[in-house]
Image 1: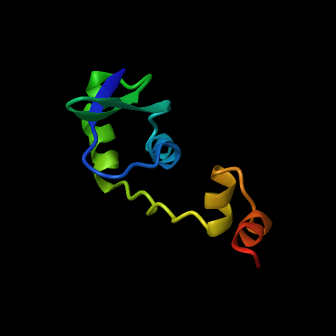
Image 2: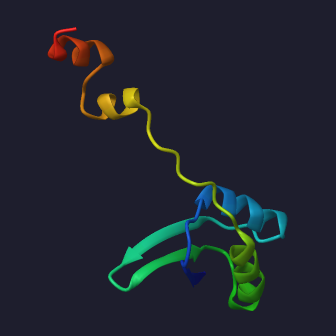
Length: 89
């Protein structure tokens, strides 16, 4: 098991697929620490660190999408109809 420092946005599932394509079968876990975030790569040996690091270096995670109005309302336990009713519409 090795750890890599996170210096950019990471999509763990996508990174795991990219590592698998390169022959590194692993489980990717992201941890947050006071000094920053790290990626834990299970089943990756120290001898494969350079390969794993190079795959991480070219990894491009999709930009997070902004939640829709419906998703924001649902997170608050509301619907569009609830909002309309509250606004008197």
